[in-house]
Image 1 (cartoon, rainbow, N blue to C red):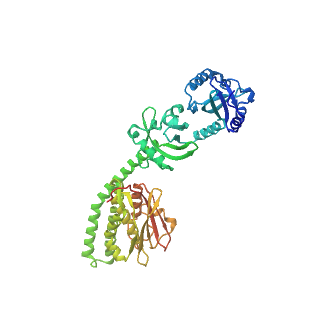
Image 2: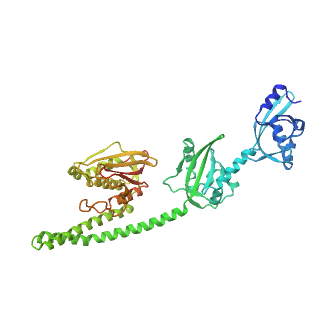
Length: 481
């Protein structure tokens, strides 16, 4: 008889799972209430019978062999780890189960306690989750802390060309190109050390590896999921092949337009210079010697030529934003601000402006382009001033992508309905005679910010000034100019 004393029996029955006590001959010596409920048999229909009666017919021979080998070297372990297990109910129904084995030595011999968990409801939930995952439009993977793929949806199968069975249980490095495979364990470890929802490889050319060895450009979003058995990572993977193709086409088109604008603007400079110079000579030599109409015509000619020169010069500056931008480097924003303030010192002194700024961050930028951006914004703040002396403040605040830089003035402001229009080319919101310019300053500013991967906008109210804000990426640690 098994060690089935009253206390032991009560403890056995109190277990939340189905429990069986099996001897080394494979006979059931004790069964609890949970086992009766799981298998649909009374206790007297279980005790004394071979445990193989609870195993599907086609698996009984292999199960008997597994039991023999287990009793030769019994250890505490899960049974059939990594494989789906099924037990046989009284009605012939196969029940998905998870089994844990614990050997015990007694005076009456060696026994094993089998703890059996019914996975029917768990698998039902898992199937619902799998169906939900398959409805997601992007390729999706669930990866455990060891980097093993635990779930893969239909889109992942389509994207990478593997069977779902080939993906599940495989290391996620299977989908990583050879060129970055060495770096992947470090990236995985860093994410697991500080898990948070984020975009993987932002700003980098990120690629996945298909079964045939080809590579596909991807964008990957990572989200940590805490499960009872540990930390998992949910990866949403978007194939951006078509987006890259459109971006490349757009870049080529923009490059051609920039080249055209550059050449056209450059070729216009010489005849405009000639018209402006000779017009100025006429103005100096013959002003007051001809009639009033002639003086007016000469003035219009010279003024028009000079305005066209400014316009062509600004067009050249606009075209150069995309073609002369250098690699982005860590730079101290204060250094750029100091340089711009020095360049504008005469205009600042003439207007009586007061310009303040607090602590400014290090950013990832092209110093020349950001200098041009800030110069345009400060020039506008000095130009569109009210009767009061200009007061301008430059500030920096944290932003999800890095830093949000703001330039605030106390100038004439504008109707907020025209905020988007202000950044378009040749858009003027004020009289040309009152506020000269080409209407390209803010268009150039927007192009510079977009070249840096940021966004720009403004907030304004007539008579209450304007705040123009833009975002820049944060610089990594290291020296900055």
